[in-house]
Image (cartoon, rainbow over all chains, first blue to last red):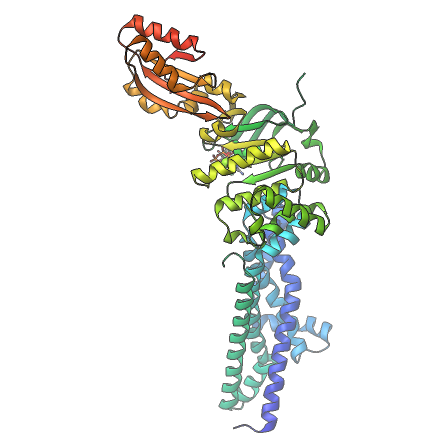
Length: 220
Length: 337
Ligand SMILES: Nc1ncnc2c1ncn2[C@@H]1O[C@H](COP(=O)(O)OP(=O)(O)OP(=O)(O)O)[C@@H](O)[C@H]1O
Ligand SMILES: [Mg+2]
């Protein structure tokens, strides 16, 4: 169907996509996880009530989330150039991906942490736990299965965004689909990249859900 | 001389401010709990019981007043000192509040981890505690694999892990069936006797108080209506709130009780049947038992009975005298329920 060069290109595209997705997810979690935690613990009745900070943080996160990804891609180009040195290719795409995904992840983390029973937090407080101990020994471990589900959803969402970045020369499978499939009407290449993307999403989602459910002690 | 209270609450009030209103959850509470007591706090839903017990370890900061733990003012402590103090006060809850992602053993290790106990020592102590609560064989079970009663046992073991002086129990048996309730209460009494831990029990059920408490405070409408030994309150409830709780089961007969009815209180000096039977035999006159609720509390016969006395006033009077001489508290029924 395709020649060897095309297959190699597709293989490289796949690796690029995986790289972009995983690198962005990891970095976005570095930002999103603490932000999500802060959103929960600075609430009025939580362990570190800071209502004003909480409101401001919430608004900033909502603002970032409401910017369409393609517009964000263009807007952050100067930032990308400053950090990566270029605005083309997979490494350059990581920057807007992180900026777009971090607030999304913050909200995912927030909703996972909120599932932890307040009674358990109260029990930890009654034992003289500090806030740091509550975060590390109660909130994160108790929310772990839900956090993993969130990570599976985040990683697949970021994968979708990374494909979108192909429109502005972002590299990876999305880039190939645009360049060959869209601009040069090579439908087969378009189709095969879409199939690979679909499989990738399936695998990532499935693996995430399995890890989550095997780590969850609430049901078994 | 009396021992120094382990918990002393002085002029405590707590007001919650909500968007629309102020809730006076507690008003001017004064309460001394002495070491070794099993102290019950009973009241209707919303009376302020949970708020009061949460003030005892400062999970809730009082709006006014002081809480002394072992003579030291909790309100004057910094965060670190308060956390230290909290380690001397175990707490258990209606919903158990176990960590769902940890096994029974790991749950019991949790407070020791927080306190910085070495891991091996913590595990050894946790195993010891599992023995005490009779769950040695379920060490590796997760809470989702345990029954309600077993979960509460794990919670009790966890609360005891840091060798507390006091165990605070907020409705610890309210989610359990009567049989499991009894076994948990028995365990709490054991802990009180064997380890000398002061136990504070919040409940809305008089039966829990009767079963194990030595002392009781009745909280109604955000205030302490009455407090004292269980025996005192049970035999001579002075306030309407106390009478309502003590007589809540007797309340149903009041409509049918005629003018010549007597309430007899058994306070452990006599047992019920022989006295009544003896009286009926002696006077050859029948009495009608309108209501009886007697039981064994703390090894003594305890409870109350409402008798419809014979029409003949002289016989009734003699019967009353007979009962009084047998050491029973007898009074004309006046239900102000
Ligand atoms: N955080 C809070 N904010 C506002 N009001 C509160 C708060 N906590 C308790 N209250 C109010 O204080 C009063 C006493 O509540 P508390 O929980 O102490 O009652 P309780 O005696 O434990 O009742 P129950 O038997 O139902 O548990 C109630 O009217 C309750 O609505
Ligand atoms: Mg309550």
